Image 1 (cartoon, one colour):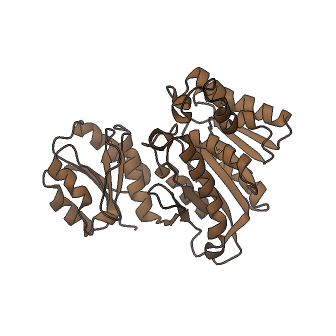
Image 2 (cartoon, one colour):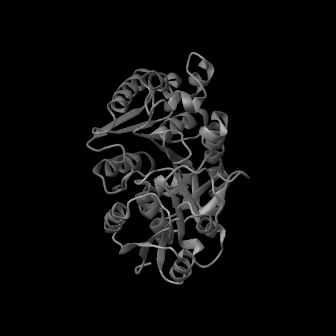
Image 3 (cartoon, helix red, strand yellow):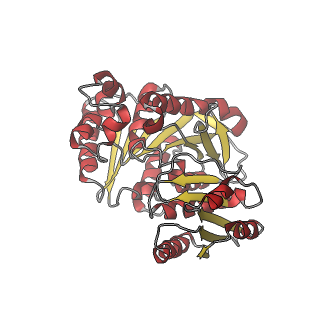
Length: 370
């Protein structure tokens, strides 16, 4: 994939400034180290057919025109190279086998679509279903040419304030980096509560974590060295999974929402906590008690609590007080607070991420440099 290029296509009638889209395309391609360009595509099918025969990662913004949107389900060589992206929320959309649909992340979401289009071609993953529903899967990435002893496993649980517009692609770069460092990266997708309810989210995460054991023999995974890493809202899910699931070796919260009761009162994420859980703590006390990492202490599992200093001040406060409460409750806790914003903790280029992996290595791969 050394000659990989990025082509961003915009369909007719798209309500977005082309100059701004071009700026985002150029900046993201430079960051990824790939050439790329943005083009209007009134004849998008012809562009897709041409690009599908070349070494290109395609991001297609179809716009509202029905004829263009119908191309999303058309098969062809382009499909495995294409991420379809809708700036506005559209809900799930059917696509041809091999392609991906993302929606609702606004203009900034184009950057994520470009990243995913590149990552999935540069570093393909093996998709493993842990259930029969469309969102019940994990993507497994392994070290190149691995043929040694069973690997420690990093289960990745994405955030996004439990909302369906954010998906497992948020953790692509982390998964690739962890695999290069000697881990088996198990990037977990799950049903989010805004469409499926809180119980579905909880059961999916539990099933997705448990599925590691079933895949261990075939893929060379060590079920006794499993770390669960969650970012933002995924931090809450990771800590709960560790509390619920016996055998987790390490729970890692990356800028996690680790205090749901206080998060509800402070309306973090514009009311994300009661929206996800289905109501307030006063209305659903048992749901909050079962779900809130702070309420579950002691977890009885070693924990690594990671937080960037330039993040939301409420998250900084939650994580500091959570780490202290966990220690007081008798848990084995490392609290790592370093410079960085909300996404630095999942950025392989950030110093806080390098320190996070070093702390993981100390637990799961002693004697390695991280």
